[in-house]
Length: 239
Image (cartoon, rainbow, N blue to C red; front, side, top):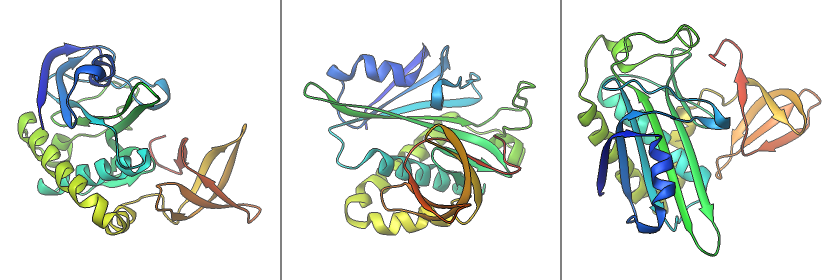
C-alpha cells in the first residue's frame, strides 16, 4: 500500500477527501500532528504528536458495504493489539475499548455518486500517551498505560496495515468467519444498552450482530429493532 506522511494536517480523513480524484486505490496517509481531528458525530479527536497514531486508508470503488469495512478494521486493530499482548474489545459501532476505557476510535466516511465512489477509514490510536486532559482522563487509555512500555509508532502503524491487508484479502471469501470473530470480541452482544431510535432513546438487549454489521435489539416491550448506525451506551462504560 502506498503511504503518504505529513508533519501537520487538519485531519488525515480530510486530506484523502480533498485529494480523492488523484489518489491510488488502497493507499494510506499518516500525520504527526492533526489540528482538527474528528470523531463520530462531529466530536473532536485529540491527537498528541509522537504519542498517538493518526492514520486513514483510502479505498477506491469499495467492494464491501461500509459496515463491513468497519468490522475489518476493528478486527485488524484487535489483532494488532494482541501482538503486543494487549486484550481489547469492540464497542459497536466504531470504538476499541480496554477495561471500559477507549483506546482507539474509527471514523468511516464515503462518497457514492456518479462522479466519485470511494471510502475512507480513519483510525486514531492512543499509543504512548501517559496523561489525558481532565475531561477524558477517566474515559481514555493507551498502549503505554496498559503495559508501561514505550512503542514505536512506525512499528504499530506497520503492523496495523499488515493485519488490515490480510483481513481485506480474506474478506471476500471468508467474511462469515471474520464476522464470528468480530462477535467474539464484541462488548455489546447480549448486553443491555441504551440507544437512539427515531427521536427518542430506548433500552434493550442486543440479541445479535447481523452480517451487515447492524444490531438486532429486543426492547423493553419485547419488540425487535434493527439499527445500523448511531450511538449506543452501556452501563459503566465511558460514554
